[in-house]
Image (cartoon, rainbow, N blue to C red; front, top):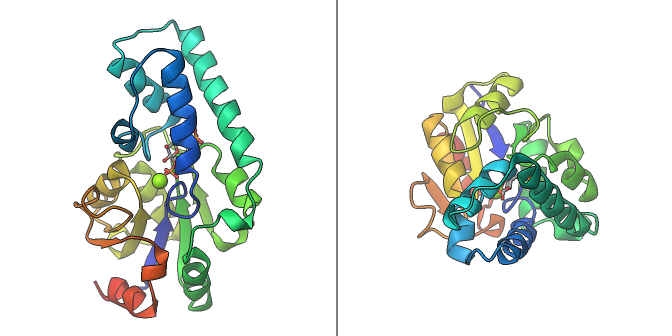
Length: 217
Ligand code: B16
Ligand code: MG
């Protein structure tokens, strides 16, 4: 059976992870809750609502539902002000080369992201056409590390989990891919993503021979 590829979005295809960090930090600061890059690592790949729950938990705060919703809305508005300025220049190095290689060799490609803004981001950077299937935060009920997003992705492509290769930048996403019995490829800091089957700093490192290795794994 032919292998299929599932890409995470934030932190893998585009560097929106830095916008999430900035906007969560602003929100945490406004609530007087200490926030750090280390804490931010635990929010990567996690849904918007779950991220806010975690921040409030760290600050030992409980908010009424209406205030919770209003903070999520505010955070997203600020995040979108960055997203709306994105162009194809925001695609991370090496990503285009990999997508072009996979597409020209006939491999199925899906997106598996926790973000409810995934389609907007893909259209901003002009990549929508590369993905046969897009599974995002609007289509899942269980956030990563639950494997739902990737299982839905491979199902939509008509494949099976053991033939799926997942590119992820988050701890939660690597756990989700491993739980789904897919090949997990960590993009970023190897010391953080140590549970991944393979690790690369970025897509510049992923050349044709690496892709062939992943396919044979
Ligand atoms: P949104 P990914 C995730 O996207 C981000 O890593 C995470 O930081 C964010 O909270 C989540 O999407 C929800 O994003 O607020 O845009 O719905 O990495 O799974 O592509
Ligand atoms: Mg990510």
